[in-house]
Length: 382
Image (cartoon, rainbow, N blue to C red; front, side):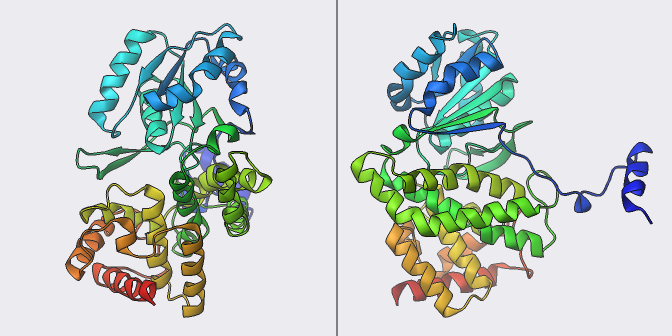
């Protein structure tokens, strides 16, 4: 039987193909990285529309205001600004949308600048306004800039929901002169967020899960995930050293590409598993919510690896790498005020509510997650 012909015939007859059999890959439209990349902002905005609006907090505005406005003005565009800040809640975003409509009634481009929450705020505003989206990350702290995903939180700083744009950003500008000046903790968080991509993707595939586009992962994303992991292992330590000089080295450039581009492509096109599921549960322990997302994910990856029954030698290698980078290897490293079994059960209960927890080689429950957390506490003290 010619299956291709059958599939085409089915589509022509109005029969939707089963997503389990459709390989799907999505990405940011354009990615630009390097020293001075923000200088392309005016050209990019002019190609997309006529009425850009900058959404960021006051600190980020101070960092990029002069350059961003200059490059837009050179292209005949004004660049008004509305101030974001604080938690990404629905109430906050609705308030910003109202401000945006007053500031630029016919806005057609949102420039989302900042770290993870700053970019998510801009994404949420852009979705409601129906605009083009340009992302300018000022810290390589997470995998979000290139993705169509963003997160709403509640007033208790807990994840409320994961939301999606109708398409990925039109452009991402990763200016490494800006990124190399970000605090070390943010870059370490980005490394933690990126480390899980290869391993979560493997679990999605073996469990026949779908990626964030609702399709099956491709050979391309498997290779991108491997490249991401390889760069992290080879360049993370040297890349972090660039923060001391304030100049982006070749290792720093490779590291930034892994944290923003490769990691972003990997998580959307592979899918998520236990490591990210644990971000639903960890904030239930007092003291943990203020720790950066990448630290949560890095801790969750160690738990996932123990659930995979990785060897002691493999786990020792991971713990050694984590300590060299500054990633969390136990609950205390996350700022947890409680580390007893009762606290772990609360984490496990929240983790089991994640839509990604089924992406694993075996069925999981609260008990096995708690046991893995206990095992990790013991290993981290050895």
